[in-house]
Image (cartoon, rainbow, N blue to C red; front, side, top):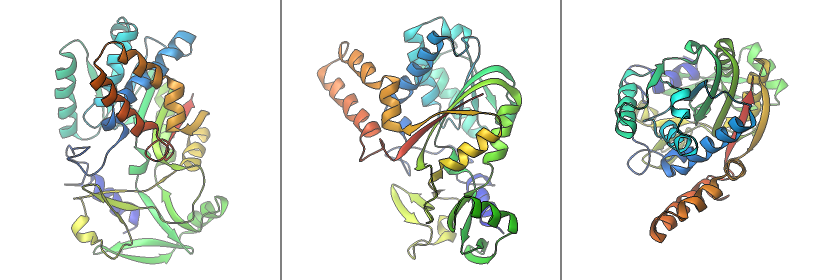
Length: 328
């Protein structure tokens, strides 16, 4: 089978890695910005609130997260919006795109713990199910979990009994690779369909997403496996695919040029592409921290400030992770 089919089964097939709820953070396989600090969600909500005051988003529209894990990010955003303007919790509609029933259950339990019955969240199995006149959609680290093909010297990877083999790549893929000056690396599968599905049912939309990668082709393989915070390149001799299959996370760096192309072709306009550090500072994360300092202890302030350093430090998440914002 093609590598993309193998990766799809690995992550989303029966007993796949993402079929059940996975811990993120110290007890899981990796960290995310959401698990690092609740100020990540607060700063995005602060950005949304600023757009609302400018009149460029609709207070009666949808706030939707894609790939919400337990629901921390959406809940952190709702909490901050309530602080800014309590009426927004009544006018906005909240949604999560999540295909796995077991994960949906975990999300509903957590949301009830945070807000009781004051906040209701609608689940969608796919972005194509969303129909709205306006939606502000947020996602953190979803594009790196789309299946991908592996291309090398005009050959495409196949997997047989957890062993990678190579055969001549289809002409369509070679044409795409030539256009993008790609000779070796990952080719994501599904970006175009995802962008079209988002555009189809939502008349006006802001889509804000964070992920790790660059807006150019590296011409090298970045695909790797995460296991309890250890990283194993896919072609590392120490990695046994049959042992990692469905048990560990598998991911790769996002080609944001490919993402941008898919969304602009679907009718979106790219508004921003920048490092996570620059985006969060622009969103007001430092101002939020300063507000927090006036109503907490010095110890708690120092703890939160340290977490924010993880989000914006160039040597940690700050430069490696990028934001891209599309508007339709």
